[in-house]
Image (cartoon, rainbow, N blue to C red; front, side, top):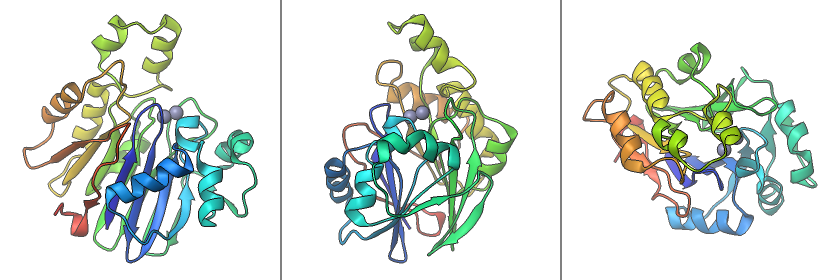
Length: 259
Ligand SMILES: [Zn+2]
Ligand SMILES: [Zn+2]
């Protein structure tokens, strides 16, 4: 199983996973051209994706969805609320698959489940992708942690988790008060501290890697996010930070172990 963190942040989010020859995309917040080049940068070759799963309708997650679907001839999967709210951005899509949050289904080498998150979007989803030897949770726009989020992310061997902002940097920074309040609200974005608490509550000995995601470029620093996480994580947890302007090298998650 390989995970590609192609981009992460408020200007675009995109992930790819590949296992047993089946590649799927999660979120499409890049242009088609940049998405394709980031896949190559990440180390994927012979790219043959099978589907795109979208978390919610905000443009940093969906603006490239129509292009990706047409370019590779792949279906788009999302909740009814996300699809309705994204319709004007998608253009003509050949195959759309609607599922409710809470649904789980088998897809090629994976079992994929969607769970509801409390972000300010129509019906946003986090995803858990299970394969024969591991479990990856992706949750990047979380207004707050909840019992459902914790339950959904428990037992994951790898996590992509939002560490959006440092609370001091947010409140002391230059954003207008209305935006500061939106970000900090229970339907906005998770602070480093809230994300670390969430990770601490789902951490276990087989959790091998956490990718810090959706870091604010204005209100956070990778070192602050990592320090917050280190306080609750064991030394053996591998911590990586997703970047806005370049892809991370693909992570090999075989057997839940990072090689
Ligand atoms: Zn976002
Ligand atoms: Zn969002």
